[in-house]
Amino acid sequence: MSIANKKVVTLDYTLKDDAGNVIDQSQDGSFVYLHGEGGIIPGLETALVGKAVNEELSISVAPDQAYGEKDPAKAQTVNREMFEDANDLEVGRQFHAAGPDGEEIVITITAIDGDEITIDGNHPLAGMTLHFNIKVIDIRDASEEELAHGHVHGPHGHHH
Image (cartoon, rainbow, N blue to C red; front, top):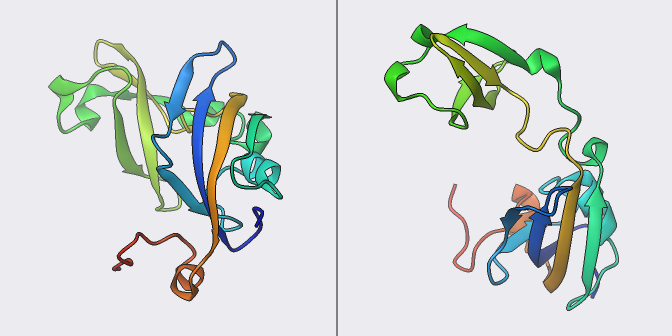
């Protein structure tokens, strides 16, 4: 069996930046997704099509096929009083906020200068080329329930 749409895929991966720093990594086949449902970045999903169990590969994914380029319009400076816990702010802290269309977005504090807090609504990996080392651990057909819901369910099902 090979990776294709409507297959549940289990991977082990290590994700690095251009300098070779590890950004993220899975543990013992813990990353599972439903192929073709947008659960992973487009460039990675495309590169995995046709791969088989035990296959290992290295993939570099450009920003336009990952989290996009950084959009300067998504960064702004706001006053400290905009935060409920204004005394507990630090660079790198993330929080959820409502986006311009009401969708939930993640905001990261990128700078603090007195009462001026710079926040950024770009994905933390926006603008980066991502380098993956991947091993395909398992591939199986998705269940009818998984297909109907558009995501993988655990070994004891999924409750909404």
